[in-house]
Structures are given as structure tokens and as C-alpha cells.
Length: 274
Image (tube, rainbow, N blue to C red; front, side, top):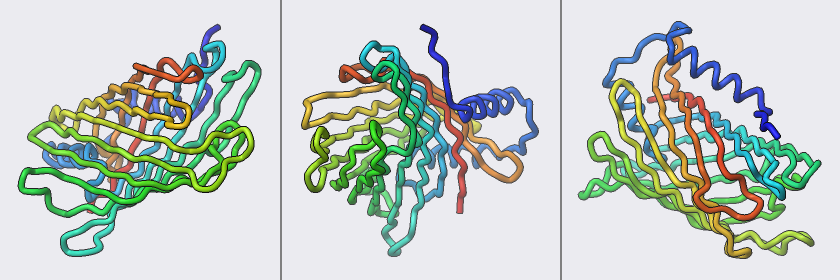
């Protein structure tokens, strides 16, 4: 059975990527140093840079008969705020709009999945060893959409540590969400660990390549999902607006029985440097 990508936003992102990278639309240039600086800040999840990513992910070969597709259009705004001369507070929201088909044969679900809200308290200056770090709470906000939501409020700790060494940025983002209260009948208790090691290399002129592993572990059901993501990104301007476009592929190194096998991802990230 042929798999189709259902979301129109994917076609919009892909068209924009193709025409922009091939010079099919008029873009104003950014000085190389400016583009590289924005690309380097974007590689840092807790940089002092307002960014608003629109990320489309298509995963396939999911579900009972490996005939299901999952489509995500995720809004991921990152907003840093200065709260002290030495400290920033970074707000990071993840809001996924999901459409999935044939996870169980003949079924379809769509809507907003659970929203996660993180707050990182982060020193403005790196440590003497050049480490950049942030830590704080993360919240799970249930949306109660059948098949997409845990239907549980959750909370837990989150943290990130990274280093930017020349053209390289590498580090780890982690959190654990614990469910609050008792789950609905038929639902399992929310208790999920997330580990995301990441590596980005700047290639110059705002171009970069990245890899990360979005590993998640369900403590309740003793299940791992471990997708490896590889992508390329380009920072440029459209008019006066700096934007990063990225395109990549993903493959599940380990997965639960209902999880997908592979997918693709495209994103447009609007940047608002101070």
C-alpha cells in the first residue's frame, strides 16, 4: 500500500525550501557573520534568541499492521527573558497538531495532542569550562483528544547542558514527566523519560548539519522509542525577516510495537534577534 503525506503544510514547507535554496524567490542576503551567528544561536536550545519554529514531521509504517501514518505540525516557540543581570529565564513550548490514520486499521484521529511547557533558568555567561546550562520545571497540559492525549496533567524536572566549540555545538536535553492524579480507565499512568543528545556543525554562510536522538522511555510499560534525526538547515532572509529552513530524515533505532519505522521532517523557523 502506498503511503501518502496528508498535510498541506508539508507541501508548503517543501515548496518554500526548494524555491528558496534554488534561488527561485527573491531573498535579501545576510552577511556571512550574521547568518553564522544566528545559526549558532539556533543550535543552542536556551540561547538569548526568540525563535518560532513551525515543524512538520511525517512518520510512516506505524500501528498494528505497519500501515499507519502519523503527521505532526508542531509549533515550538522559544522566548528568553532577562530576570537578573546574570540570569535568563527561557520559556519553551511544544504544541503538536496531529493527524494519524490506520494506527488501528480503519481508524483516524486528529487534533491537538498534549502540550508541554518548559522553563529553564540559565546563567547568561558560560562556565569557566565553556559549558552552557539551564534547568527548571516542565509541565504536561492534557488536551483530552482521544488517541492523542494522555488525559493527565503532569510535571517534572528538565535540564539542558551543551558546549559550543568552534563550528560544533553538542549537548543533551532531558526531562521526566510524572502524571498527577489517577489516569482515566484504560489509560496508563504518565511517567515518561526523554533524552535528546544533539550535535550540530556550522558549515559557513548560515548552513549547518545536525543530528539528534529523540529517545523516550515509558517507565510504566517498559518501552523505548528511539528515532535518530539527520538534517540540514540554512539561515537566510526573506524581506527583512531572518528564517531558518531545514529538511531531514529520521529512522527509529528502537521502537515500541505501535511506533513508526521512519519518517521525514521539514521546518521553517522565524528568528527575532535582539
